[in-house]
Image 1 (cartoon, helix red, strand yellow):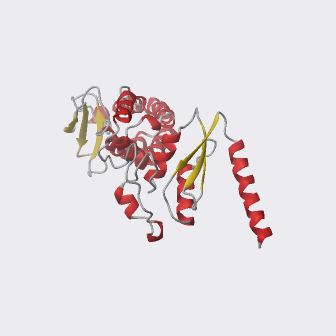
Image 2: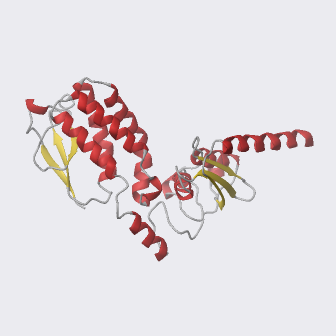
Image 3: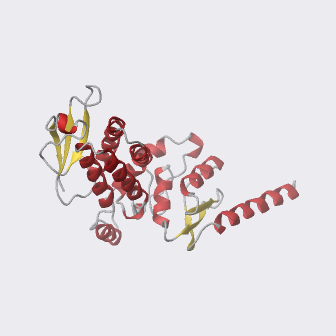
Length: 282
């Protein structure tokens, strides 16, 4: 039995070493992450591990995690935010209450009482951290995403499927280059929930040259991007607009920097069809 235990430990060390070998510009830090059991370990490590970016090894006995990461691609805070969104507190971020509540009963650990930030936007008494977050938000980390979205929208208004495809490829690049560690906690929570769908719709628009299909995926893309746009810092107003005729009469929304209606779902056929349903202010 002892030999089997040693063998398992050796395999674990080799596995971690192999993963770490893939990381460039590697930093390694040890942090406390709250949890109870083997299921917690699996969830924590799955949330923290990203191929060629980060490797997390959590010990259920000590509650300590060894985090190795490529410092040019991610950061400790970004990794801990992902883990918090999966339901696990650290000494830096608290998980959302509803996510924690939905964990299996065996995973309901004794929660941290004080942290430097919270994923549920609880009151933050650490003024230094607040100042740092304010500085980071002076330049919106999602600006490139929004700019490329509006370029895509304008291409659809013109029914220019080739330019729309190119704009979608640019948007896809912008999505992958977002520095998530620079997002506020509130924005980060929403961003992590919608990111996969944004990438899927953007890629589908890029892969087709059929305007009708591009517009179909654009409807879903717009709905998801609205969720983060409305809580993200804006320098100028953005208009959330609606066409009742789109989507086979079910209606569809889009975002615009212009209050004047320019319909991306019909272009010149019904350019002014629609109305502004919400103004998102800075």
